[in-house]
Image 1 (spheres, helix red, strand yellow):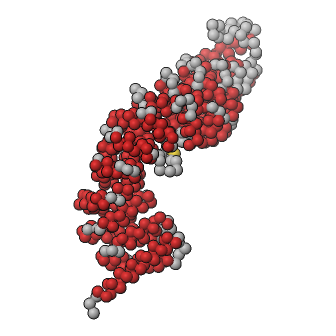
Image 2 (image 1 turned 90 degrees about the vertical axis):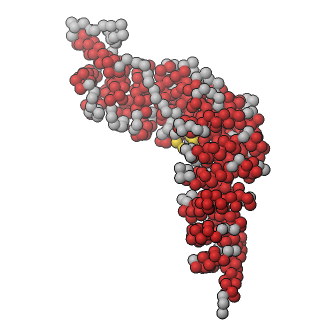
Length: 608
């Protein structure tokens, strides 16, 4: 899966991808190929000897009535060449020689269907044995076989192309796309043969993940054909058609194309499929499409909020991966106010709470993803003020504290912190404090297991809580001042600007309360250094928080001395002569006046 971050703090989208793997029930391609080549040569011998040597006959072999076209000399030589190669060398060479490749090309471009079929089977055998990437020289005749009018050739060729596409060579996709494989594949989407359709959908699913083919995949009405094949009577065709559509949703361009050609009603309807794999794939496709706000509104407008009701229902599925995928889709859909109200109205909170309780202690990867997605959804829902009371009443806060303290799922911790912040900004800060969310957030920030990626949301939540006077005293006292030291360290050393800014803001709020002597002495140098760095920043927000914090700290004579020794007044003077906003200039002037006043007081207090 490829992760794509979307601007804004609401969520981080995961763009889901269908991992195509096609297996066609068939006899050994090698045995089938050897038998076919022998029958062709056997017939040639019969023709050349005027019937003195009888041809080998079987119910599915070649005889004079079936085989109406004589082989040309170069075709006969090509058959002999490949037969000798296959029987003596058993196709063990990783590289196909130019001689054998020429023989393959002769069979490929023959007008004889049986020779084309031989070439296709030979390519199928090579796809099993080759240990290197596909070359253009081999790809061209293979793609040509897709254009054959013979269904048997189409079956083998499409299956072989799919095999080359799923091996771990990225260049195979690029090579096949560059020589126009999509044109015959789009044509084969209208075949009447189920096996050809299944293989073709699988090929398109694989190619849809290659950047080089993204802009070509909607050619020749292929999207409409794929949507039609979602309703096929053959479940394997449905699987691969759904996978192709899912992989097309990886790019915004193709998402727009899919929506414009009517994909949303079809995908929503397929959520009712009795096949769980198809359910899973269609949920993922809808989740990807729901990245765009306009598409979310269109999706919800289908029927009587069908997609919302069905996704909530699928969160109770017996299949863990379906529940997980439903959580992702709900999270993305619940990014807007209208949808947030509807989800709560239709009972999403109960489903989310059940998922959280079932997964909060698990360390299994699927459970971890599901928990993070459920909390991401809850976070989105908590943005809407009307939902705050419902979330608090549902008793989510203690569960979020437990997740913060667990230490093994940083993505879930991140969303739990974001949800707590949203609720604290509203009218329920007291409920947050009574549930010991402050202690859980601090513990999570101090825990060395917590990934730095979660620090921004944790410090953002603490910044909101630190506005309360009793929280200020707690933050200064927690872990014998260890929490305060951690904030100073993050303000100075964090690689995240957001964490630096949030931590500095909390320190500034604590400075209003008054920093105890022992904490001041321990952290004075770190505070001076990060204030100095902030005041030299080009970011107006950092300049503002640095100046504001400095103005609070100058109430303490010890900090006045520390900043004077660091020559902070030189930095302030440079700010006053720079082209900053009036608000920054005014604040810098006020700080300079404070520094000057403090210096004069110091001089007047010095014994003469």
